[in-house]
Length: 95
Image (tube, rainbow, N blue to C red; front, top):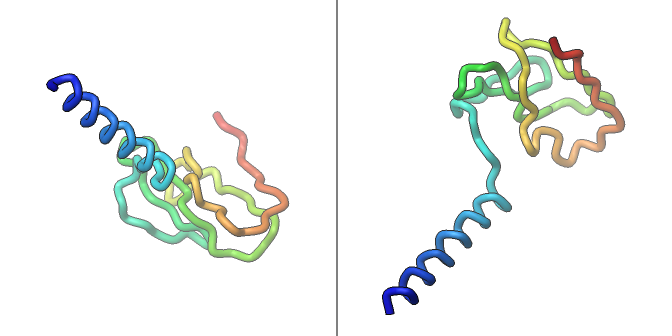
């Protein structure tokens, strides 16, 4: 009986984790979204820089800035360019 209960809890736990991966996105940002030009961004919770979280422009060619407000851009969010019909994304050289 104990094994069945453990198995049920394990299945529930794994299912919830899978749903979180499919529908969610790993969020290492602090949660406050700011705007820089046509980009939405957040400071990473790790303190290592900026994550681009969205793009509000209409251009089909996007150039990612190397830094925003003195902080390096280190990440592009999973759905930052969702439904944007981009043909090119220019990413700056890394150091």
